[in-house]
Length: 304
Image (cartoon, rainbow, N blue to C red; front, side, top):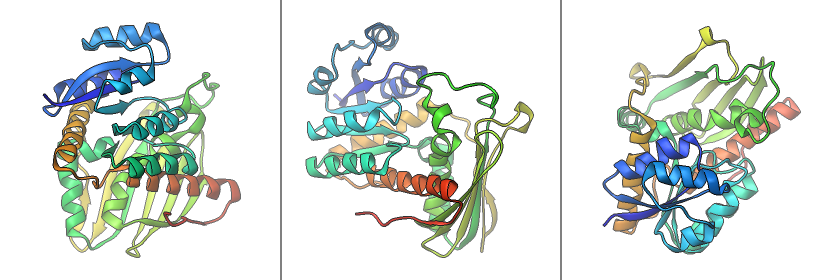
């Protein structure tokens, strides 16, 4: 039998990506579902053919690992509890929107010696993972750019209550994806400058540990005709572009589940997308937030 996973979350992403991913994996078994709404929990569990749990603690008690598909304002406390209970973690991005909360999750993972992964779609889609891994091995990149412009929201509309993507904006929703590609190619981000544009559009300029620089253009509020998602690296090997992802999110989730199961089976705790990397992303995004607020370049504080 594979690693028993509990799913936390009841939205479409929880059902169609994380839940479907666990079911499609070879290393995981979906053992139950829990969400804050009993009605939505029952519907999601029924759709996935898994038991519905009445409490988070009851779910955690019955599983080996927990897959999270909840907002980053909710995830940290639950993830910390699960880790301290000895459960392995498949975390949603971003791990948190507060570096202190992300640090507590990381500390709990380390203290309990559990395995962890941060689910970053591009890093687990097979066709994109292969490109990123090869580009990281190649090295010699002078710069890289990530353009991630999607028409998810009308900037004239007020955010719906509880819609964290709209309230936190593209920086926190799309920013993790961009950084998950730029960082393995260029090295850890040491400083960031952010500039706000129309709607929730934000532009990032990053300096990395290798001396290379990166840029990212992020938005959830561009017009439909302006949609563009492309990442390009420029260096000694020429100009290389990340392949467009064609596999579904559930395929990426299944890959992540299998990767976590392998870590557990092998007794490994380190992975390029483990909680340490998730924490690093939160620190960079927080530095970008401060750059926007203070209109200056911000140094990224070193990890503790």
